[in-house]
Figure 1: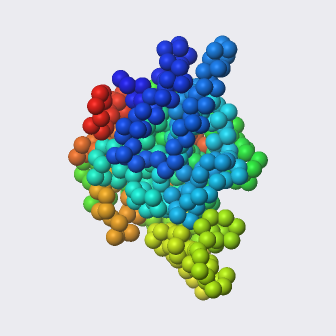
Figure 2 (figure 1 turned 180 degrees about the vertical axis):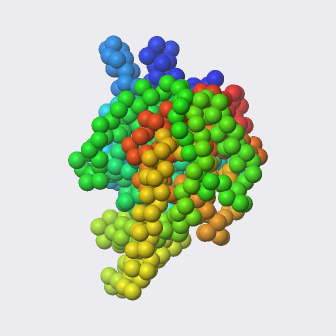
Length: 491
């Protein structure tokens, strides 16, 4: 198998055994990017020279006989809403097209300390608002399994890069499913950690009470390795939790016998893709074969999660995006008659349709006379959703559900119907509303496209989530499938 198709832990072994150098590995990924990027369009910015320099530093370390960290020398990609000092950070928005941050996000600093080789910044839905990466101000990313289909969103560029072999792993952000949904659509592993486990410092904010950074990888073990590197308290993030970070790889035993897993009936609604439902039901059967006890449970307020989310998230976005006014940084419109005119023109020119839609929704929900009727009521519903999970977790170790109700849809299919697009996150949004950890991993195919299984855990129970996902992964071979991009010599 080609190097770009190998998981992180295998690449680490090859580096340790000196079967390949970090420079050679990086060159291989850069060649892969050159070959498939015209078809996939996963990246917004490539940092070729930075990557080669980073690889050279790792090879110097190896030459001195020092022990390599698990991620040292491994080529990775970063979602373009993670600030990187001196490297363009656009959030896929024209309003930040030329923005160079003066500081670096905590998660990026931690990966750099672990020896990351950064290949560049990946495409996304503008300001992370979307479910298809079609809302990017710089054009859509395409799904490596079918270039006529979306990769999901908003972390579609990161998911597509991993699936296409353009990065060994990537970071994304998840506000309502933006790691897990593209992971499902692209046939990779994606983890949204518990809110507060991973620092948000340096993540350009969409909805501050929901946003969380997490990894996208080929395999569950890789996911554990990346989470190990980025998790932990950060004094620069006031929402960062004071919790101990366990050894996540120690949980990867493959043993789940006796674990109690709930299967929420609300996650199998009418109208769901029947092949997706069948694949997930087969996954449930496989978990039972492995010794877990699976029972149907109920999360009765699930149906209210989507409308509540689309009040809470836009309200927070309306506040967070007020800073983009053409004054301090970013795009500034010309030809304005006064400062108000400049504000209006700047935001008109700089923001795309979906961002404008959510700003207007959020501003309306927070306005005088409507705050209690909409925003306050949505917060009360959020509490009910969290209590549903708390009650179920009193008796169960984790929950297993579909990640998405369908497989990846065609480009342009839902652009004109925002509600249909929002329904793509039907099974992921409740997790963000409750601040829980959840992981998506491949569990089958429908129409030749990947299907994702979602494992949801108690707060800060990432180890349990990874344990269950790893056991399923090792008992199946869905994670070994690779998309055929039609590149000569592809295996």
